[in-house]
Length: 395
Image (cartoon, rainbow, N blue to C red; front, side, top):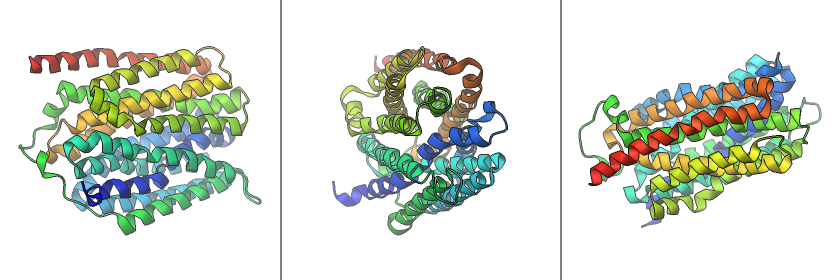
């Protein structure tokens, strides 16, 4: 296949290397800034929750906007929003305004809702059999973002004449500007592949009742919710409660984000080799082991092991769920199904993020891990239901 056939993938991969730094920077610093300026310790992780709420609230508008004006204009508008939000966060920290910082976090979350549409833009630009491989390649941008974002945040956390972390968010604004330039110069809207354009549009309720769609959404929801719950709590638990250094906390967060995306070197090929169901099952088991490793009174390496297993488990659940979803709707249905999928993912992820601060303050680290188990176990009956449905169709 010619390189031109991968143009959308290549351009969005480059843009996402910069754009995806927004989440790890806010994950690393959101709880730390919140601890310093929030009116109560229970509210320390509220900015991270606002980021996820912003994503959940914007998923449907983002999808509908791009259905009307096209991918490029939607992506460019979101990039401009991210630059403004990053500068607003810097100003909020400078002014010690917790409410303003939460608004900035909400706007960064809104930008992330548009960023999530990158995967659908790539899936629409290639043949169906190419989707798992291309999605896994796109997810490799997370490796660059995992290294670049926290490093910029750490290096500019202390700037002469400015309060701590103001420089971090100014640096984030620069990264967002680079993503904007890549999209402006190189991205172009492309027609969706014609091989999936057959069939009339079905009502959303009928589509969402398909067992395979239920499993696709449940896998991504479980992966994101548990990942958000534990990841949101980790920097505060490590740095503020267990008194690990900022360098050690940064290393663990970076390791987690790398673990989320390094499997993308091979996870797309694993989907092709073993099938989506096996990948989802593997993600479930990795998440379960991550809770076991982190249980008790964790030291540095326990935090490290928990976060690495959490990252790999998320990768398998998210890639498996997204691959299943793209195989379950017709092209005429894509925007409404994508919007519904992402709304459920990030809406329920927000609950996990909101619960992290309260659980950490009231029940400690083990309370966070215990709360993740019911979410994880919900995936078992859904997977059994989908497997029985597929077996009945094959017989």
